[in-house]
Image (cartoon, rainbow, N blue to C red; front, side, top):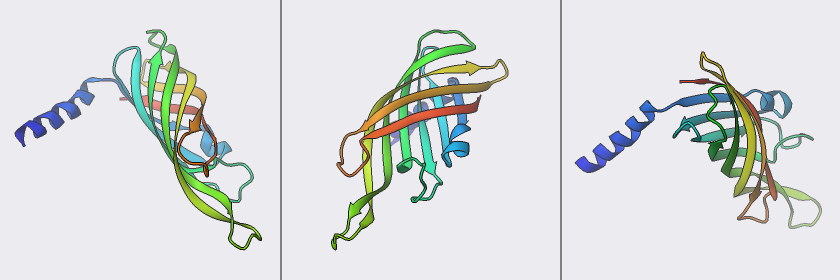
Length: 167
């Protein structure tokens, strides 16, 4: 038991010695009515890992909305330079997404909304600006492909304009 407590303590304390960022996507609430929060932890000057959480606030009947109602997206980023202000990155991600799809009902006279859960594997590219005071701005875009269900959308977008703060 002592070994487990020591390992957990060392794991948690390792986060205290690295660069961390908290971010909010500012474009999604304005355009698509969804909230995206992100946390990013730097492993080195050239790589980081993080997680994003998307919450779709638009009604299912809206004309323009994400298919996903909720999505949890762990990601890994590799930065191509060690510039302290501007940097380009490539990203690999896995998006665990939950939503609803139109399924024909048993009477054959319409459709019913059925829930789905799927996982998308994808890539994205982007750029990041880091101000000397700690403000961060990153813009990125990419696509993922759902892997497990035939009832979910085939393609999952990963698009954002994040504003955050380096801790």
